[in-house]
Image 1 (spheres, each protein chain N blue to C red):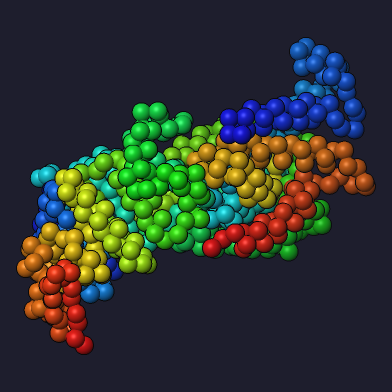
Image 2 (cartoon, rainbow over the protein chains, first blue to last red):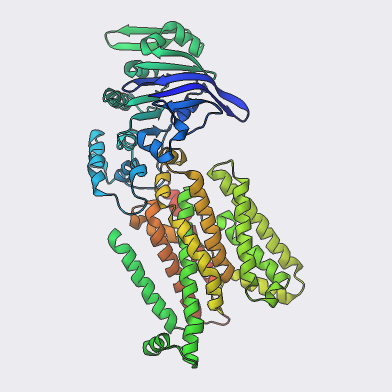
Length: 253
Length: 327
């Protein structure tokens, strides 16, 4: 369980987050939505303990997140930034193994005890046939799966993901959404910033709507994805339609 | 391949070391060399081995090793295949320090003044670069390094321009070309502690470099202390390469080239590149030093010049190759 209390973040003297209160519970998938520049990525960075707020505090199961060591934090929460990339042509298997960095000895080869974890992460994300492929030669959908395998190989309590579907086609975006949903169902705290609101509607338990560095609305997804909240959030008239195919949002500009 | 890489490189290094002791203006037989090593005495051959060729060999190994290692660390840290120790101003800072020592005549009074000033110059430039880029990321570090490096090079040019007599200018030029000739155990004693300490600091960055493959944000989220990694890499480079440049003069390209030669052999893993890149760096410098001793067509070709002449075409190939393979 992560809780943000009265969090304020400034960049170059200007506030990018102000008076933010939010909670992310275990076994729940929370989507963070809002227009560009609303502070979604900053909120995720703060919740991940990667950015220290200038005021307020972030708690992980009641303890101040800044009291945890970098390694301890890395063991408990995984974080995926927007459009992750791999800079050297290391193998897919190596990328996934990097997810265990905080648990590995500083020198030497990968200890045998971690092999099964890596194998099962590769299998879970259908990557077994790609394990020797250089990670720089993957398609967008494959890379997204590799990154998800990297993030989940250590079986973190908390997974924070920024825009996992950016640049993915509908099939791969749905696939990524399903996999995040499955992680939450298995008990993980999942926090996802999403621009794809239809996907958000499909997978979210809870939603946090951000606007201009504030939390505009927070609560169960069905209370946030309504005509009025969406219209106020994006300043465009909106209709949320629910039918036999699921729900979708249409903006009437 | 992976398992045999380091033993094979060590074997090559051992063979070259043997040749380095035997080869030169006077060729020695293995028996003479071995006898001199085991039982050093005052006769000419024994002195040539223990006081001339052995310190030169040790310096070649140390200098080449630290150049290759630091190139590998900087390429991993900056995630830039064109990074090398010179990029951050270490080499030009050391050159400026040495030039100051030569210009003001400190070097004439005290032989080790040149290397000591060079070491100070290297440490100062990297500290300034680090201070200038304190709040920024990798790019601001590179830019600060380039800026400081340019200022130091301007100082060197100014000293050459204002040199009080042709001899001073000649001395500066000769030092800038980089060489291992006429180096003694005193030079080894001065440089070795700094090179070994710098090498140790650089090796400690290996796990962080692996994680940095995924970018700074992900590396941080994986528990990597970026600030600590940057300090280790920069001060390791300043101490090690600073001390190396201090005793040999400027030797470029080794730090750039050595990591590229071994990278495909360790499957591109940045942390695994370090040790083999150090060994390959030592092999390059040692082989080049042997070559400069054997290729006598007129005046001696300086080691730094020889490596540049061989290294520059490789650099060109690298640029073309990277353009083809990078996305």
